Image (cartoon, rainbow, N blue to C red; front, side):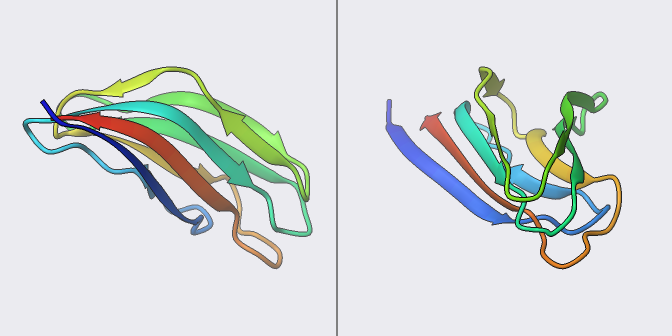
Length: 110
């Protein structure tokens, strides 16, 4: 068994889903430690975090509004245990000046 600490980072893409945590390989599991989302825009942003499951259906993990300069820290336990599960971020409207920034941290066991 191999245990690795990993992270992913990037930025939102307006109303298009962006993968925050990619799906694990078929022989691995990912235990999400936290997801940080920073609103670098000059306006409030409505954010949706979604558990994407291409085998069944998607489900919202959180929907909230972030004020300009605020950071959302999502630290509920989420296990990605199949190659068809990932976590994605989407905004309800286009940003004014700057896309939101994210970083996800997780442990992968294979």
